[in-house]
Each structure stands twice: as C-alpha cells, then as structure tokens.
Image (cartoon, rainbow, N blue to C red; front, side, top):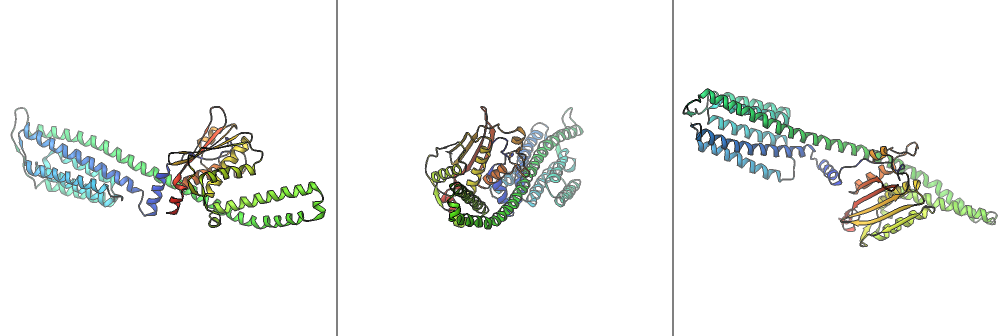
Length: 452
C-alpha cells in the first residue's frame, strides 16, 4: 500500500464538516460562528467596563474627594449587568448573531458610557477617549453602514457632552490640582484603551481568521466532491456502455461451450471457462460501480449482520485475488444487524487492491469495534509510503505508480469515509510496510440509524 496508496491530507473532523453543511443547507452563513464569538467578546468587555466603573467610582470618592452621583451611576452599571445576562441568554439560542445585534450591543455600550460621562463632568472627563474603543470595535465587527452609523452616534454624544453634563464637585487636595488629576486620568484612560484594543482586536482577528479557514475548508471539500461527482458520472456512463458488450461476450462464450468442436479440446474448454469467469468478474465490477453511483441500489441493498458483511467482503476479495496471501481477522464483539453498504465494500476493496499491488504475499485485514466505531485495518509488507505521498494524502492524482490519471484510490476512500462520518489514517510501520486504518461510526451502518 505504500507507493500505490494515493490520497489524503487529514480532513477536518466529520462533525465539523456536517455542521458546516447543515448551516449552509438551512441558510445559516458560516459568519454566524464568528458573530457568536464576537458577541461573547463584547460581553467580556462589558464585564470589564462594569468592574472598572465600580473601581473608578470608589477611587475618586474615597481617595480624591470627588463627589459623584453614586446611585444613578450604579444604576447604569446595573443596566450593563442586566444587558450582559440577556446577551448570555441570547447566546444559548442555536442561531447566529447578526450584524444588527452586534450594532445594537455597541449602541447600548455607547449609551452607557455617555450616561456615565454625563454624570461625571461631561466632555471634560478624561475617559471620553473610551469612545474610540467603541468606534474601533465597530469598525472591526460591523458592516460598513453600521460602523459609519456608530461613528456618527459617538460624535453626536461627545458633542452633546460639551454643553449638557453634570459638573463634578471637586475638593482640591494638597499637591493635586484639577489639571493634574485630568492628566492622570488621561494617562490611565490611554493605557486602558491601548490594552483593551490589543487584547480584543487580536481576539476578533483570530475569530475572523478561523471563519476564513472554515470557509476555505468548505470550498476545498466542495471542489473535491464536485470532482467525485464528475468522476462518478463518467464511471456510471462507462459502466452502462460496458454492460452490452459484456453481455454479448457472455452469450458468445456460452455458445462456444456448447459447440462440439470446441468442447472436444480440453485446453480450449478450460480457456473458455476462464474467459467466462473473467467476464462474470467484469460484470460484477460494473454492477458495483452502478451501485456505488446510486443506481440499482434499491435492488441490491439489503439487511445483513456485521459478521456476514465483513466475512463476505473478505471472501469475495480473496476469490478475485487467488494469488493473494490475505490474513483476515474479525474481532468485532457482537454480530449487530446492519444495512449492507456497497460504497464501504468498494472502499475496502480499493485499499486491499493497493496493498495487493505492493505486497501480494502478505496482507493483513483486521476488523474490530472501538467504542461506537467500526475500525478496519489493512497492513502490508511493501516499501511503505513515500514521504511526499503521505504529506498530500487524500488529494487526487497523488501516486507513484506512474500511470496517467492514477492516484484516485485513496482520494475516493477519504471522500466516501467522510460522507459516512468516518476518517482515514495512513502511516508507515516501524518494521516495514504500511498501514491504512478506516474508522466510521456504527450509526452509519446500523439499521436503526438508516431507518430513521
């Protein structure tokens, strides 16, 4: 399986892909995941703001002798706390956070900051520069129209605070004038602004990059699936076209077996029998291609058990490769009823064929149950994977066979397993040879799951 194995870079977990597909199918854009994270960041920032406001009120009242309207200011802080609790309840809903919701959340924050500034000196309060934090977050989080609207709102609020505010009652202390306190406040506000911007803008940027990475993954898998659909159509068409000549050959060979001039020669009779066996094998391959493409499945699919499915799979493959030294081990702990999955059968055949090409004298096929998953392991004693092949495992046309159009084996294996919610792992063994391990959830095969 080494060189011939031809696929696959590790794919994202099946649950993650399923979630992304479900989001798209239900009209929920992937940006919603970043929106929920960004709303959570605003909630965290609001907790910091509430704690900072409480600390500021206590500090200026107890140590600087500044009289502030404590009750109204604590009322604003209580409003921020209630807004945060409501936002946390909103996040429990299984739907994305829209741009309008983020815009409204930032407007509430601006309103809270404006009210606190109105109660504590208006535009002369050094903490007015915290408006820049809201504007910066809006520019990063919001769509252009809403970020522009947020800028206009903050400008209007700042302008209003120049004429409408409640003056501070300040008791001057020795060594500390009003201007000195203002400068100290500006320094504290600048440091706070800088620290919060670095922390939160960095985290928001990470959220955006994660969203872009998910979108890139989804586009990549969509392109791969489109590639598979086109190959499936081609294979299905070829299978249909091959059906007629194979049937004709079967009829001709049947006629030859009844001709006295041919049956009288034992060597010719044996060769005719061998040709008929090969034609039957070709017809079986064509049938499995059509089944894997979704055609004839209604006639061929049926209920079986795990042991019958695995034992029959190993026996059928061994029958088509009489020269192969296949050691089959089945340690699946119970003989559960399943639906016979032809695509999984073709996947295992593909992996076994790759192993046969490099190690016909020794192939190990082992089936076992690990938790709620079926694990199938195929080992060979060939030369192992080329490092370049391992690095691009799962990509099409990655092969060392040197054939035009080769390298589709494990590419199809990875994509079929991903469709079934499973995964593929491949590696070189320490004592030589290669290992390919297929895992998929039992729910993908169980009768109960497929019947729902």
